[in-house]
Length: 119
Length: 113
Image 1 (cartoon, rainbow over the protein chains, first blue to last red):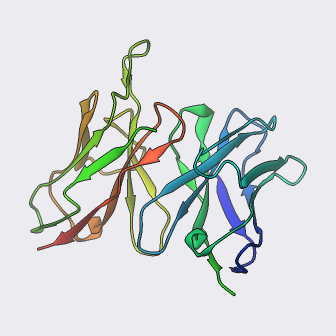
Image 2 (image 1 turned 45 degrees about the vertical axis):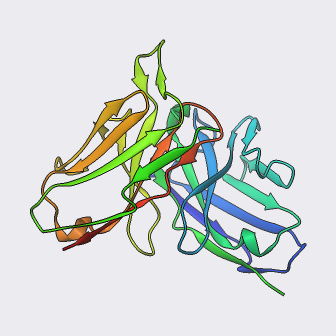
């Protein structure tokens, strides 16, 4: 049973950088899976941010591409998300999720972490 | 981007009755070389992450009750709950994985009438 756990600051100032990590337990990050970040503004729907393979290959949502960096640390079995120049519109619950064998859908999700952008 | 549109936005169904949720994609998500529809369904309860129910448009994820079924092809898909239970109250999302960016429908809220 794969377990994903997101962590990071719950409050970020406008124009600052949002930084989150997702630790993968009970399974190696270095297998044939892609790992995604998905966010959900309070009371709203789901938005895919981007994904990473253990080799470091990435794909990003064009709507966020200029502000997003996703990276992987195989030694710590974790992935990270950085989103810069944040505004209130970036306030959301941020989830990490597994895409098993690059099939494209998400079979395991973390519990999510709420990040609020406010001064 | 492929736009996913769900209908209705919400529905109220009596316990034991059928609930039907529709999902329409702005372009076909049927990949001709595999003859598979790149469409998944998720259930999300308050305060929880989404849970995978259905993938390849009609394959139930392990452990998902058989009252949940998916159908459709090309651009039009349906999630059916054959006999609504109290624990099925949730928001349901469709997602296409035919191309990146992965995109989701806006969600359909299912309640008890």
